[in-house]
Image (cartoon, rainbow, N blue to C red; front, side, top):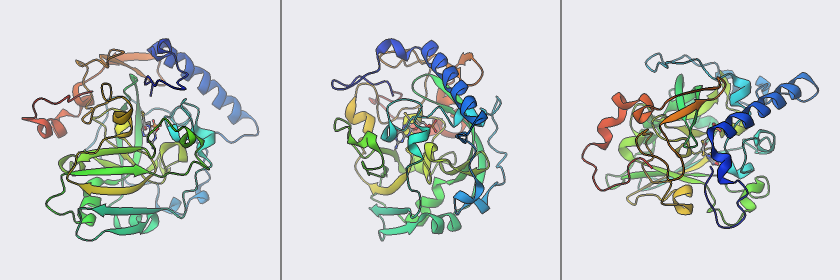
Length: 318
Ligand code: MTE
């Protein structure tokens, strides 16, 4: 995520320019196409029978969430990912295939009536699954448009039965350095953690993702369960979640621990507030070669702006 880390950080600041991102992306797409033409299966060509939840897809689309641009093509989106557990570059899709996603247990604990664990396939049976097309804006100033499958986080909050003292939900990714070699890098505060307020968790836009492009999510997207918060920068959308902790303390996220001056709790998309090292005014739409203006709340203000009324003295948007 192009963060400055004192030890071991190999990406130069010059490489964060949108041009570099674009060129890198072109090389990746070319590589993926080459791989697809030969023996190797392309990253997006998932056999439907690989995943026990495959029969649930495709899901009916919820048309309430419209997008103003075409979906990013699957080959591009599946080969340009951030998932530091598998490497600090965008080509992690091959390494991520090592992640075992069954059995997969999700723990719900903290300030809830009764903590419990639930197997992912049991959770899927209990949740109202649907497809939603969302725009996705990374803090690195690129964006995609993705057809997610999954369920509103509100349904999970209801299942959890939080106590009234719970003000936040923290989410943790798995921790297994044997299969995720990025987790051997000791300067990162593993496991990856993110958090939202209870009001954000219950907002109608907040979506827990289990599928992408009409099938179960590929591992590089954070299978079998990840978050999608389309009005916040992508780093808030934590992947491969194993735990939801309801708490009265504001969670300190993975990136916030590393670089509090750059990655704050709120992280709402805002073109007026630059990242300390680059502008957020425009974004590269991956797959098109075009830059477009970035919108406040990534264009989702009608759903979420009210959540931030009256919040003062906070670093809202970084
Ligand atoms: N979740 C985990 N566990 N590890 C990560 O490195 N990267 C974040 C977010 N969730 C990340 C993560 C960042 S910086 C972004 S931009 C998005 O995932 C990328 O999601 P995508 O690969 O589906 O585009």
